[in-house]
Image 1 (cartoon, rainbow, N blue to C red):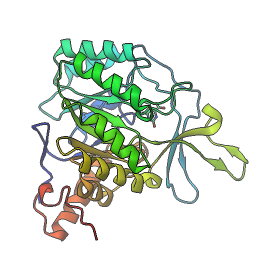
Image 2 (tube, rainbow, N blue to C red):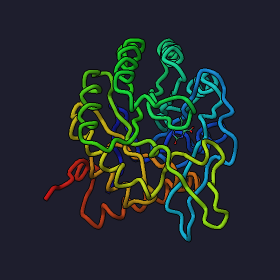
Image 3 (cartoon, helix red, strand yellow):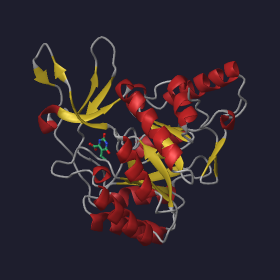
Image 4 (cartoon, rainbow, N blue to C red):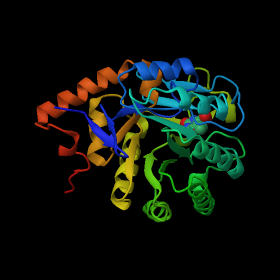
Length: 314
Ligand SMILES: C=Cc1c(C(=O)O)[nH]c(=O)[nH]c1=O
């Protein structure tokens, strides 16, 4: 079987990549992703200026006797937009496609970054993060439909209708799937949606210390890992059904070939890993590739297109 695929007409050797925010904040991590067996890679969501982010501890694996996932309230730490723009100028695009993620603190900041990217004419693919749950005082755009609509109108126009994508928060109400998709479908240059970002504002508590386990926001943070897989699959399939002209990138709960297969079956074209990559490192891509190939072989599938988006209903 083959894992070869295409995304926005670009050839990829396989559909696996990192989730923005994990193993992608500094050049050494980005170089490790380039060297890894991922089919593509994305940078940490950036703001116009560098940010330290929230006080530590700000990321924890939720152990119990076996990690079921992670909780994070990083607070958008990043090296600032110019750093990542410079990286896009020296990336080796022959090896694999690069996505650049932006998460401006204001609409003007997002537009300034989009304007620079448009002028840079870089092959990097823009993913606009509408779903950061951890910047205190900032309601995430993905849950404010009017603000999301305004941002998309301004950003697609500012980017000269060049193809771009958005990173969405999880939705939990069918009416919200409908409303978000209706807005997105009014912007043809939004060529893909990445579902999902972490499930915002979970609370992990340790029974021995009788305390929360991350410092920021009284312990509230974004939930990732096994816990979020069914919600991630629902969001991938909901937008796959509602946005036939767009590609869906699946993110959430992927730690092996099994979950990658499920995301592809639900309609994802590419599949991102966050928590599992954070814990295992970039070697995970070789493992998950082998597992996905093995599942395809067992099922008699030659190519991803043999099952991609072909989820059955009862
Ligand atoms: C960009 C900020 C994000 C962060 C963060 O930097 O706190 N954590 C997430 O789980 N998702 C985000 O989108």
